[in-house]
Structures are given as structure tokens and as C-alpha cells.
Length: 64
Image 1 (spheres, rainbow, N blue to C red):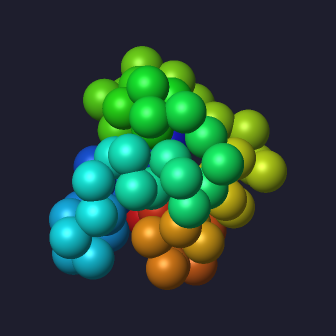
Image 2: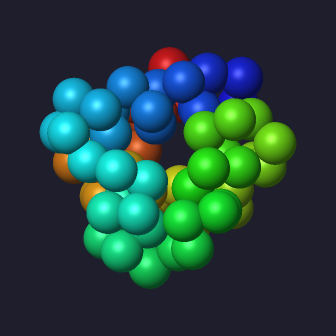
């Protein structure tokens, strides 16, 4: 899960989305998105899938 936060942030910025927008798209709280991006939290698989859909990438891409 080491690169998850970095990859999520990069995918979010590529779409020019704020953390709030990713949170709204994924059904998560903005704080949770922030903690995941900073590597403070490892999401469950279902959360990973929601985040990947929110930033329009396959879930595996967030784990590369």
C-alpha cells in the first residue's frame, strides 16, 4: 500500500479534483481521503474501489 496515497493524489490532481470532490464522488469523508493520501490509513478493498472510480482509474493502478 506504500504508493497508494501518492498515486491517489496524482490521479486526483490529473483530473483537477479537490479532496472534497473525490470524497463526494466516492461517498467518503474528506478527512478520510486526506488520511489515505498521507499514508495514515489503508483503505478496505471496497473503499479502494470507490476511490478508483472517483478518480477514473482501475483500482490496481492506485496500488502500482
